Image (cartoon, rainbow, N blue to C red; front, top):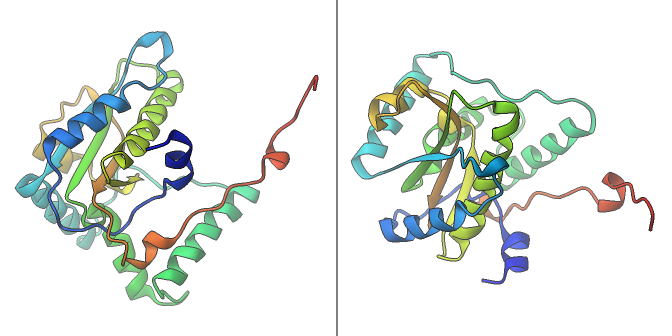
Length: 219
């Protein structure tokens, strides 16, 4: 796939087919992913990839935690001003596509549950880094590798969704995936073959015009 096309066409996939993803395709995706930018070439990323019965156990544990109103291990990012409006814009687009009305608490709850079920994707990749690493420096690298993974996956017909809901219940992940306490959770990436009949998959988030976010000097 052409790089320009891949970057332009990438979107968050929130509905997947049930088809299993071959391990070899995931391996190839990660091999491309780790060509990401890395400060001092430290390569801080570590991946825990789950599918099948293991992933289903995590889903069930997450739902039990959700239904029992167990506190999550991370909180949603808080933003204001133009950043909040951009966030609201994509929220409105998704809810419109899914026919979720503003006051429909049941459907909104169901939507939240989809997130902690990894949008029912057949694979989830949990991204971690060692607690010994300075987060202010190396979290940037983790963002770069996540973007690479999402774009690389498209080469193999796969869709992805980077999500913080994937790491809401971290003890569940540690227990089911054998993730040691020495590792810090960064994010999760749901992976699978896109279900293009799923309405939310037609939503593409907008981007601010370059002229509004760029200052040119010396041109």
